[in-house]
Length: 500
Image (cartoon, rainbow, N blue to C red):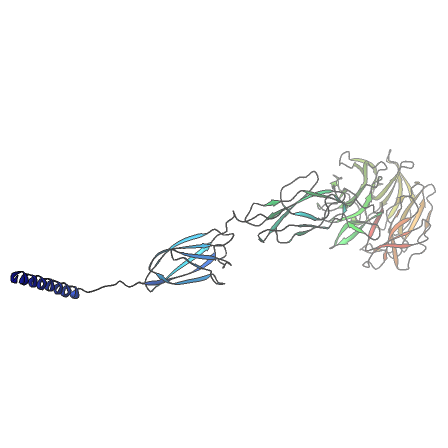
């Protein structure tokens, strides 16, 4: 019993010693806990095109689970991120999402720049343009008009427009204007009685261009103006037509003067120096379809005083070339000599009537103050004197409708100087059968000249130019009765008139 008690005590003592040894050993080991480290991420989100900030952008930092919206300048910042690798995902409507990788370092700020590009797959195309004016198939549209249309863009994108405009019979796909910012276009210088087609192309610079329907309109008919005349524009003569209120310029290039209307009233012939030498050209009654008729130019004493005429059937032009009177077809063919002037004299102007098939011509000497009127047989070229021995500068003759009378002008003052000035030019009629002439400028203002007289197509009136004899005052067009009564001013700043 004593031995067992001693053994038990020994075992307990050993356990106590082991326990104390373990405790002593444990107390001598150092305890270590690793601290957590943090950093930050900052950045800016901008558009790739233009480098501008966007609204309503969402920035996700993964795997932190944090979502941020950048400020008005596109800037953002996330603090207190444990060190490590993260992905920065940036999304906003209409733009492609961006995914960037960043590494956060302890006590540092990692900077990232994000540039977003448009996602065209998200952008909707502009709506198809619809017409505003002129209405589709509109008629009698003015020669200067406004084309207008309307459309919109679902995305509120900035729109640009191109406009195609072409005449009937001349199709084209080439725009007349591109890059328009507005939905209207003013078009000028359209042609009369012409059908035009037009189309609008819209682009938002993102989607494919959007084409409107093809619309059409027709311009107003060719105006039936009764008068054609010359007027100086920028020191050059040009041809105009008018009804007394509306005036249209028919020519623009070079100098163009002395208009003469065809017997069917549909064409206008005139003298032009557009190709340096003075030639006769023919156009339609609005100055289009221009064609040079003469091969040999018109020529004689004092170019601006020369005149010409149509044949009664409208197939030929009769005109002077020094001592010869030529006829040529209006297509430029068939040039022929109709008559030759007496020795030392030159043709200056003419008219041709179907009544008896006769020609009346003005013939000059070496100066504009030496003039005679002759009757010419177009079949034989034989000349017969009609008005001679009348000193003073004379104007070109014009037949009455019945061919029994002709009208011409004459400076009864017989004033002569190097400029060809006249002091008292008056209008005369001459009886073709007798050669007797009568002064009908009974109402002319003293100090004025009456010039370039011509009968109206129905013979009821005479049209002429009236102006001061000072040589620089404005010229005006007048009409009066064949007996000189009822003088009436019809147009200012006009000369060399002709009736349609």
